[in-house]
Image 1: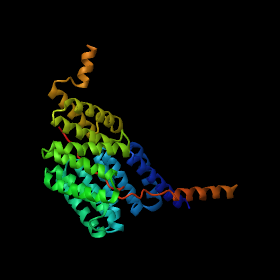
Image 2: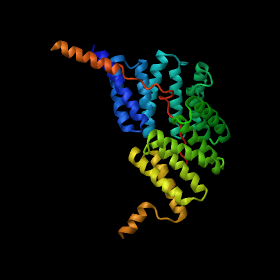
Image 3: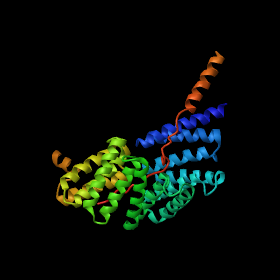
Image 4: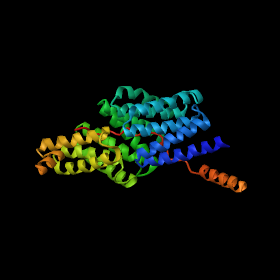
Length: 289
Length: 38
């Protein structure tokens, strides 16, 4: 009876943790998912598939928090359990490969990420067919990894393929569509097609704001990318305003030392130094002098 | 009293069990979003 209660509590906490993660409240998500994993390990055992999937969700949260080592640890515990219980070709293993690739992508280790992403695509495509949105999500993740290796033409083709499936299956607006648009915009920008990239990035930012709320960290990613694109077109004032907004979101939601906060801050400082505008901290010092 | 506690426990557990999972496709997959550096 007690174990049954603990297993139910793990499910409840896991559900709440996933809700917090999707809302971009990663610290709250981490607390809930850690509790859920503790309950599940106690009630179901460390090798149970449900425990493994809670560890997978915790790994995603750690990735978004910028805690990559903790994320890797959670994924590897989950992978060990899944291999034992479900086998290497199970769909849940594809999920773990997808996320392990994502972790390496976030660390900038794109060559390491690619084999994970390709295994995820292969397993899921065999099981679900090429038109399933989960397969498209794997393809979109692989596209981001190819982009990171500066294989932009390959990346663009895969981004467009995934986007077409998402739009066919989800309609006009969905968080996967917004992420794919954002990445496609970044890819076009990297290939020197800023005019094409801008409306895509704008659409991604607007869609994310509507679906996720104006202060979700994913919105700040698109605002940052839009700022980079606008700066490349010489629209410095607009870019500056976007950086300020993105930076405020990153600092508040992810903290001052998070890798995304650091990148956005450096981009903003580069813009200010390129245009001779004093940086925020310099302006404050000048005001106090 | 014991019966009441057991009943409340059972009802609470059943309610928690009914909590819908997040059934949306891909919810347990992360996004590899590109953050451009300038």
